[in-house]
Amino acid sequence: MNSRRSLVKYRGEECLNCGRSLEEEHKFCPNCGQLNSIKKLALGDFFSEFFSGLFAYDSRFIRTMRILLFKPGKISKDYIQG
Image (cartoon, rainbow, N blue to C red):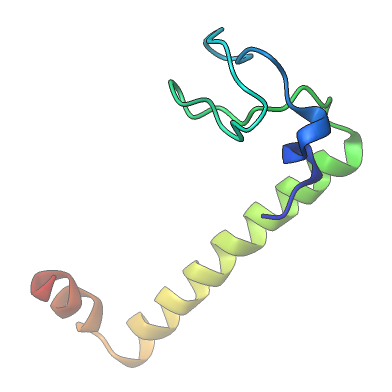
């Protein structure tokens, strides 16, 4: 997801999650993986993340259901084969 929250101007000096000191080039905390951003989430950011997650989930679900309906057993065979 392309987010403006990860821009350099929004990066902090310490991780908001674990408190580790961060440098400006750290996009994520090397200790816990938290995004290095001090930008507050706006209502638009919330809805954008919510709907992008919802539709990403639904697209995978629909693809899986299509395979289950038209090619029963394919998912199990693919899983067994690795």
